[in-house]
Image (cartoon, rainbow, N blue to C red; front, side, top):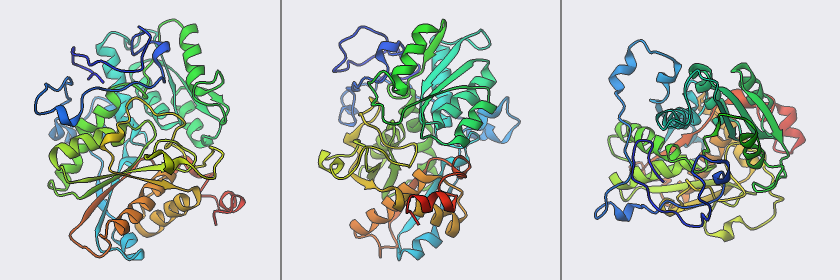
Length: 388
């Protein structure tokens, strides 16, 4: 992986094409960053990192983009008590970003990186194309609206109507693809994006699956926010994985500062991101209702070496927990937040922390309930799927 402002690159494996990271040919195909935590004592970090002036956030801002980040961390005392936990459960409320999700951070970072590299020029007729489950699309559409880009979002049919409505309101064009299409099939959201990029002049796929700006956005900002809020006292982080940028960026920074901190990954049944691979076997047709986490391939930016333990989650457990989260804590978070909280509770029990009030666990809540009013917030929808 290469940082947005660094001129030093690292080699990757499994890539046999000479295509640049931004070219259509490079989109979606797995490769690996060769720099790791083990190298930090004897190798120069090839990345250059963003510095954020948090004091400036209290002033008048140039645009909504300047308000991305600095989301609150709050205690989930009622929920912990309801599940018999004495350890401290904390929520990192990423759904409180202006676009409604954790993906606002990477959208801003990837666009600014592309502008710096000359791949995009504001208000000059360029087009951003992105395959996404919706939240990255909303973040990119928000940035595109402010910076003057055409935005085309390609996403599977299962993604909520609410996401599509927000995208259209932001001026994005939407193309839907079949849920059952694998990532490398012609009908998939990734393949369709590549096709569009070849057809449309001055278009760019920012490629959240490969872009270093994805994990680095969290390494540079989200992780520091967590460490500051927790006064560098943290026993475990729990986060879902989709592209893997959030958990990878957070885990690398946290393990540099707090080597004993446990990193818990969350992956839905039907996805293949968890390790060991045996966790991904079992009854499933590959479809799951929870949006924003899980994939049928391993994205480049997902560094599974920094994840200590994976939990597989089922739709019913995740979506019922999302409702509990709203009811007990008034945290208006989405379905993947329920997945993360369910896994956090299970992890606390497995680690023997349920009765240990000295333990502190931070759970990333990726997006909000706005996107799912017609889904898990709807009793009829839940009953049809026998989740309640």
